[in-house]
Image (tube, rainbow, N blue to C red):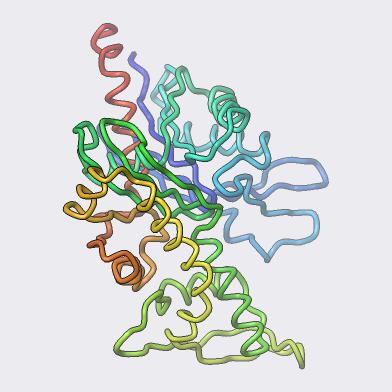
Length: 333
């Protein structure tokens, strides 16, 4: 029986799994909860995420990925094994081919760690693909032609900016900044401005519902609950979209600077292509309100968000599997 072909977007904040012929079948947080008393895993994915900040002392919920890189090898391996088995189902008797994406800034040691963890998790073959290439393929961009395409992939822990042409990366820059940093910036701003301590999940809710990187004609707001730093008691304050713009200004500014830097280093012919084709945003961070407008205002280049930015990298990684393994599949069939 032929094995399953799987593409994995191994992100800092979430894991997406693409299965050949089925599309993206799994999307769960990159969180593992384990018992420190016996070193046994209690939960993985969404179930573990719900334990963040709500567990007794012996249960620890951790993210084994940091800035797109493995920070805990053993836990990552077990997490990968769980998701691969869940994606395959119980009827598959052969190990799958797995394509997995990595940031452009990854070192050979880090690349080897991801590859080894994937093999240990049950893969028959492992193919590594750089995130901008996977993102572009998933966004429907034809990167095989000799013309310049610019992709900005903003994940949970990293941001990859790249110019692509003829199936390769011509110029790129990787930042250890992503959606998680947006959340942290909001937490810090609310703490300093309102004297209120809020959690990561509350910050994410603010980011999703009223977060913006660009000034809005109409301001929106929402109430947020937290702990008053003075009294130590629960407290509710109202946060506006303008508050989030101020909170995110520095973090988003670094992404804009990276886009500007890559454009400055792009060969003139490819830069002209980018002006014609525009800049494409992918990744969960691309959903931040006003980000398109901000980048366009700062660069003068038309900027759009991919149709489904959250799944673009996973889809592109899976399609990369199909492209690289098609001849082998034909031989085996």
